[in-house]
Image 1 (cartoon, rainbow, N blue to C red):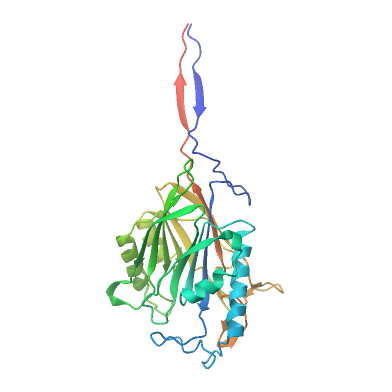
Image 2: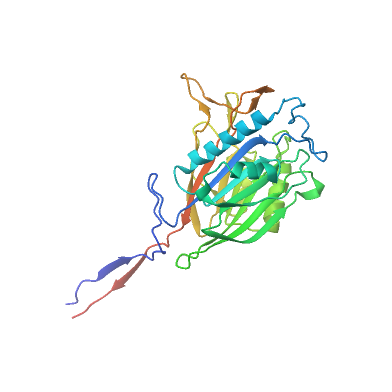
Length: 320
């Protein structure tokens, strides 16, 4: 009689270990940070933008003391979000210019050795999206600043293509960083136009940023239709607060059929959790008054790793 069939199970593993459990981060896991840093302006008046209120003589009495205090808080928040590790990429929005970015960089750990991608955008207030990256691990292969459609004076989207230096891993990733038009624009179609314009110019493995829209609303429908799925991880309250009113505005999306998967964590930096009610964030300003905090948004940490290949099953039959 024939011998019984034997089923052998196997799986194709990528180089390195891909599993991410708890707070453990494996060698081939990417840590990507995103943070809307709430009006990170210097104290100088730029005659080409509407930044007059962020000067010592302006409405917000924006002095050097306040400016450097904010930078120190931002640097502490970034270090807190990294939990002792070195970030691969950091995306920031509401950065006024390269001077602000340089002043922030010198307050981050020197051993991180980050390089920056930034240019002044046509935003009427002069706020931009800026990217920092760990150049010891990653090489910037391509960089595109994408203007908003129809001549809008809005901040540019930033598309980056990075390749890993390590020959044995050799990963590459395309990231699209966005700060979509403000909620002061009630028409969601304005945000959709900017999003689709950016993706029309450059496809990306991951789209992330301040999308100024809840992921379960129209934005989520558009992203799903474009072939993206949201990086899992739901904040308890949200990612942005105006007083005790929270919104889920910052989120990330990975290509549904792409090579990457990950998880999202909202870092509770600057949260006022006293009492039993809904907490608030200590912002820089609230309702026109100075509070001296880092930002009215929370920093977001994404852990991203290469998707494992699906297991395969094959059968060997032996006969006697």
